[in-house]
Length: 211
Ligand SMILES: C[S@@+](CC[C@H](N)C(=O)[O-])C[C@H]1O[C@@H](n2cnc3c(N)ncnc32)[C@H](O)[C@@H]1O
Figure 1 (cartoon, rainbow, N blue to C red):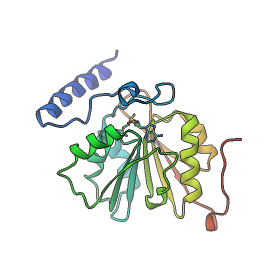
Figure 2 (figure 1 turned 135 degrees about the vertical axis):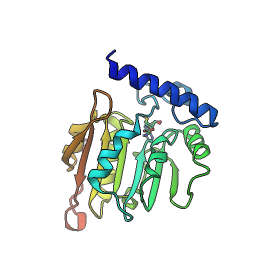
Figure 3 (figure 1 turned 90 degrees about the vertical axis):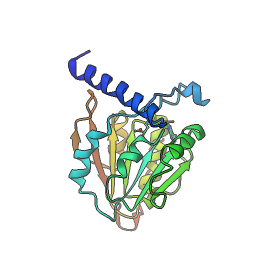
């Protein structure tokens, strides 16, 4: 393990202790089995160092008309970070009822007028167009992610951004009509990649990623 990784691991342990002292639970990793989810289809729920999203948000120049949804919001750690920016609306979309409950508890003292929690499977969610920025920290594999991208693209009525942290399904993103803009450091080996999507006039072209 390199010095940087050791530093990040120690920082994380310290933050977990701070969490416990504040009676919060943002950071401890949860495995699919603990949530009653199939581990061959669902990944562990963990969070990364949100500090690295600063560069991405500065690049986009977040303004008061922007809205963001975390696809697979886990315990709400990224949502807490988003609250530092002037978003008009912040959504957390999470398949696990248990994790949604934890995120609501963690964020109960924050501005509830802009926070929206959705306990749903992201591939069935039908309100993507209410947001113009999507954040995804590697929530799932291709099998599920293609359904999510289809929903986003086929409902888009304006320009969208996708901030994809650890973009394991990057090829699918491009295939669905997104354009790569720039990549950013994440603190780990994987990158945070920024994509944009502009719908055709009237969004008449519907994509279907599955054959
Ligand atoms: C790596 S964690 C990221 C958590 C959060 N975004 C963060 O940065 O702190 C991925 C999350 O995606 C959720 N997830 C996986 N598949 C999902 C799906 N189909 N619909 C909604 N949430 C999903 C998992 O339960 C997990 O909490």
